Image (cartoon, rainbow, N blue to C red):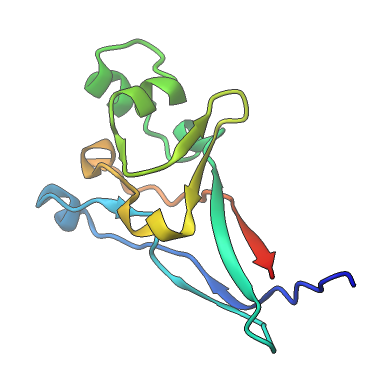
Length: 134
């Protein structure tokens, strides 16, 4: 018997912050939003999320701020990770430019707000959810 993964009934993973929130110590959490599985028998669960950060620095236009925070010139995603500008429990794949977050840890992962000071840029971070059907 081959299990059938029904997928998501709804998917909304978005975060909108005003600059004043960040100036007052706010962070950008990766668990903002919600999802609902289309699961008729209750056998499916999200196991992990993979966030593709490979173009994050360019898309979010944070290169200058990242350089300032890390004391580097042309800081990379690896510099961002090692400077703890992303906090929480995750596994970093430097060759793919991704972080994988287990579902149970999604509430702990966030970008430090300092990275976005004086930033009014909309950006996207592609995410894939890994679903298990038992």
